[in-house]
Length: 96
Image (cartoon, rainbow, N blue to C red):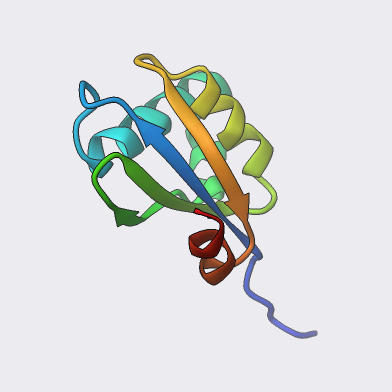
């Protein structure tokens, strides 16, 4: 049987300055995801920070947990706005 790596999705979000840098936005999403779906689902989501620009943060998650990650982003406090989602970094950067 072939070993395949999991498919990923890249999500760009815009966060307020009150949230701080990218790690704070990522930490807020991880905290909300763990509260809503549990720590095992958080590990399956494999959230990683890819790029932290001024107010736009790009993070990566697994395809299987992408819907749960979007729900966690929508329910974060302070609010975090999802800009776009793509399966490749190149296309996501082009859209932004």
